[in-house]
Length: 222
Image 1 (cartoon, one colour):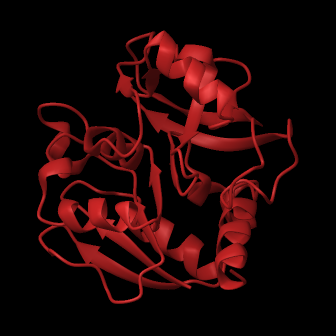
Image 2 (tube, rainbow, N blue to C red):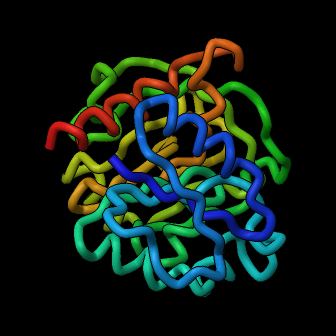
């Protein structure tokens, strides 16, 4: 299974994400933001956390217009898998690959701590390694993680079972306590918490490892 991890100026979780994917069994290539193509045979594109382009204009806004953005959008349109974490989630909403927007946290502060999440659906290759309703602990580190979407959009996410994770308890003002959402074809996941920071016992937790192992395992046997 081949994964491509994109690095933007200001990315700071790209290496962590690459290591987590490698430990789960993926062949990983790191892709620079000025590239215009993805490696041949790429199954998964991973967009890491950080502060792409210094978060100028809006978080993820400039990254959504970078040279690599076209290849990322085409990959998703072909049905390829995409994972966006923290700033990566913001990039995916700016690209229009996921609905909604990430706003300033309700308390107007940067939140950096372990967060308790509830697994809201197991009906995706990203979440099939968990039990429905299971609570897991995944670190968060964001200033603009307050997920907002119009009422009709929220109803659509709920009706289609596309809410992947929720905060339990709430931490940043996100509507319906949403921490992660899936695309309509369930092959694009955006989430604010950092599973790559909870994928090794040496990091203090392993609750994120199940996401990488179930995703990689599912694709290897597809």
